[in-house]
Length: 167
Image (tube, rainbow, N blue to C red; front, side, top):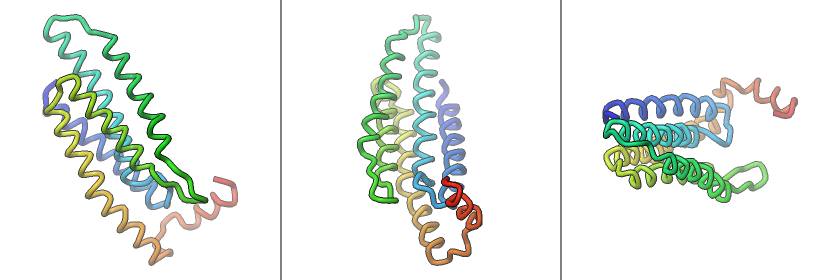
């Protein structure tokens, strides 16, 4: 797969994850801006890995090794369980969602390295670091802004309705 296509698909996944996460962040849900961005990027990475592996095999005239793709699928599942162990609930507060999503993205990056897709892995790491560094600042700003100005929450009336209904 062309590196430009890889990067553009990854950036589109990032933007989509940001948009979904921003909506969740504004509603003050536990999985907000960074978590949704990481999950969107991680899912994109796993698909891009399998597509790149298949494309490289077809281009070189070789057969696609389905065993490698099965291993990739098991990594996705196994890291999901590992990530679940990182998530902790403390009353109404949930901790570790970003760590779990980052583990999932790290598994994707490691899988890329295992397949020899090092350029793609470097681009992926830069996107993941952008999410964990830059978007985390945006997330904290939104949280602080909403705490200091509860009337600024555009979903405030809807939240109370959700609480009554039971979410």
